[in-house]
Length: 79
Image 1 (tube, rainbow, N blue to C red):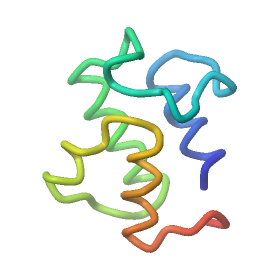
Image 2: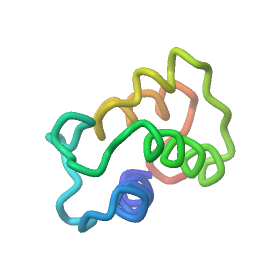
Image 3: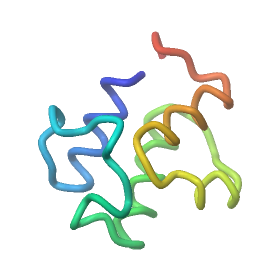
């Protein structure tokens, strides 16, 4: 799961997957604006077969928080 999230974030945000880590956040990535945020959420939903609530979408502001929300939704590292 973590690798897939890194790949999706890298594709949408235009960064190297190796650069995605615990410090990757809305306020630290220059290209992560509101439009890219919606694209990222959509790609994650499609990639993992889940649909997020508004509160979850608003909270998906960093790599660690995205992982936590996915895990709370039952997505596991093998998924």
